[in-house]
Image (cartoon, rainbow, N blue to C red; front, side):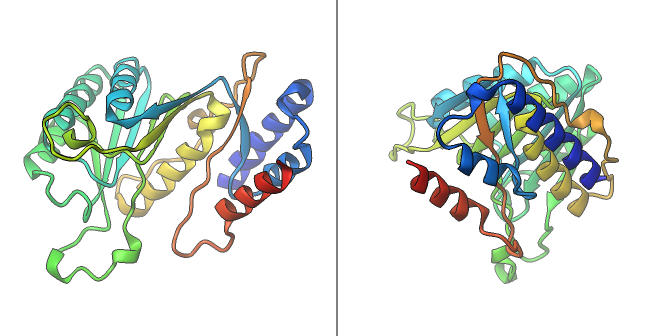
Length: 257
């Protein structure tokens, strides 16, 4: 099914670029090379917003979660049962009670301090919960190269968040903590651009959850229009990845500049 979905997305993206040649500048050769990377697709987006630190990231995230109509897919390496964690949790519970499909996934090592009562509260409210690589004894954990550091959110297949900011109060620099945390996140809008985040989430979810997500095109919107003014490439990697896509993409951009 992933092959069918990938072909559907690639065809839609190439058609969009054909009808909107202004998306491609003098870096066309690099763009075409990356576009045909079967691992990470280059795709048009309606909007791309850089979010600096938790002060900017959480305002946008909470607003987008509140606007969810169909589904919320949320995945974090670290999710803490603190003020911001509970604000996110409360929205997830409310949206699930409204009929929105909510799937919540955290890494067991990174979120080992997350109180199980929060997970139980989510589950009682019809939020599906999955733990990536459950660990029985943290002191003896020997899978440190197989932690899931992803911090991604997909809302209705049209809005995506990705970057380095976990869900924890210390990422909000409001004077309550000694350290000032400088980190970056990204908000992306547009079904084609968000499709890679969606496929990454579904792959991780089906790896660690008994409640598998059945693949269909409804999760992968590729709507196109004249308002798609940006090009985005979502790149993911695993310990067993066979192709250094991030390195090749960076080298391609450097060579074209």
